[in-house]
Structure formats: C-alpha cells, structure tokens
Image (cartoon, rainbow, N blue to C red; front, top):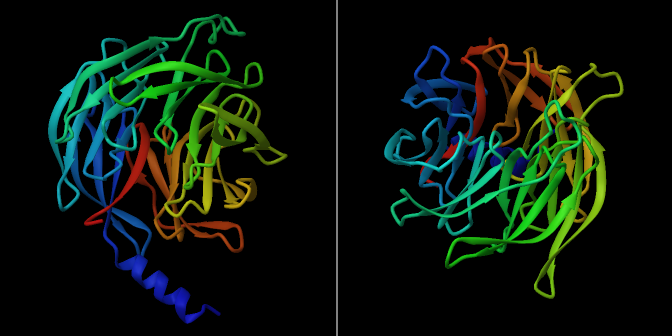
Length: 363
C-alpha cells in the first residue's frame, strides 16, 4: 500500500506539464520534428504541432531549457521554446562538413558540439546569448584505420558530451573503438586531446551518458551490446577515469546480429535505459547513486522493429519506444518495482523516428 507521501509526490508529478519532441527522417514527409502534449495520467501523447525541417536525426535541449537544437541536412537549426512548448525558429548554421548525427551543448550554453558519423568530424560552434548558433570555433577530424574494412575502415563519430564540470568533452568514435577526451578552453571554444578510453575491438562505442552528480560515465557499445561504467574525476589537472563495471544490454536468449541503440537516463537519474535492434527489446537498469553501478531491472520486447530510441516518462510510470523501421511509437505502463511493462493503448504512427526528448513547461 502506497504511503501518503508517495501518493502526494505522484500527484505533484502528474500536475506538471510536459511536451515531447520527436525527431525523424523526412522521406516523403517534410516535418522532421513533431511536438506532443504529454498526458501524465494516461501515459500517452497528443500531437500539437509539426516543424518543417529535413532529416532531423537528433535533437537536444539547452541546459537552461530555453532552446532546442536539431541536426538537419544543412547543418544545425536553433529554436526558441515557447510557453506552450511550440518551437520558433531562431536561425540555422552550417557545420562545414557532412550531415551530423548527434549534438549537445556545454553546461553554460555557450557552445554546441556536433558529431559527424559520415566524415568523422567534430565541430564546435559558439552559441549567442539569445540561443542562436554562431560561428565555428573548432573543427577536428579523427584519423586512423579501424578493424573492419566493410564499415570501420575510417572514423565515425557518434556522440559528444561534456563532463559536468565543463572541463572535458567526451567523444565516442564508433569506427576506431575508443572515446577521445578533449580539454575544453571555455574562452576560445578550442579543444585539446587529453586522454583516450579504449574499448574492445569491434565493440563500436555509440552513446555516452553521465550520472547526475558527474562522478560516473556510461558508454554504450553498439556492436557488442554492453555498457562500460567508469568513475570520473580530475587529478592534477588531468582527467582520471577508472572502469568499474561492464554489463550486457541483452537477455541470455537474444536474437542474432543484435545491436544496441539508445542510452538515456530517467529524469530523476534513478534508472538508465537502453534498447536493442533485431532483438527489439528495451532494457532498464537500476542505478546505484553511491557507486554508479547498474543492476538489470528488466529487458522486454517493445512490439516494433528497431527501437532506435526509448524513454521513461517523467515519474517513471510509463515508457515509450521509437520504432524506426516500423514507423511508429509504442507505449507501455511500467512497474519498476516488479520489473515489468504492459502495452498501453495503440501504436502512434511516426515515419522513421530517431530521437525523443521530454521538456517540462514553465520549469
């Protein structure tokens, strides 16, 4: 039986207003971002708007929650988030390279980092006070020869995230099987290589997440379907990372040729979520806030093909999966005490969905 305090906490969470932004490729549809009101009681979405943008492969929010940034064929685009969650275009900016696959801001909302899968290029752009994207401050091309000529014969940058102290940028290179750690110059927007975290050969590091307190790093490996957990601190002016855990994203009886896709914290950082293509499952881990280690909560099917991204709703009562190949989203009621999810209503059609972000209105 729920305590009075827990019921009150759930009531307050349900009263908050959220929107969800879903990005997608635009094959036959010009609307690359869809905006949804989030029904916190029923665990469903109500579409409220669409944004015309080409091939939005990834979106991110500014740390202050005032702006949304998106990848597009022509570089990046910046949007102001309106009071009702709608998006107003601020500007677009080129990245002087091929289309990016990932982007994130620093913790002062001064810079935007763009990862380039196709050309192995990392681009740093300055952000203006009003949220617009400004000039390029640094460009780095990764170099080297990978282990598999068919795909990994050259660098493929898939993620770039800055540490919570705003000092080091972590850059995952899927092609080279390592994560470069760059020291960030906050005045000039320049990067300098400080260290390298090397992964197993042919493991393909894809995504990076950082614990709420900034002490732990989580690196998802696409091809070998596991997460490495590292402790992080700065010692003597240098980044110091120590591996403390490796944990699979799969059940024992999984499909062949499975690849890991998503990596995302719940909004309260109590849970870490990943997903698996071919196996078509979502896995949720309990996160130990003391030592950073993960414990499997459940790994269950999502009733769709290629869950490229997935997320727990705020409050952790519901879950949504973006099924890229199926062209739809599926919704579930989640019971994380029992480690189960149950289908919650019909699927929602979305062509080739890529990424989802929840945003609290008026926060």
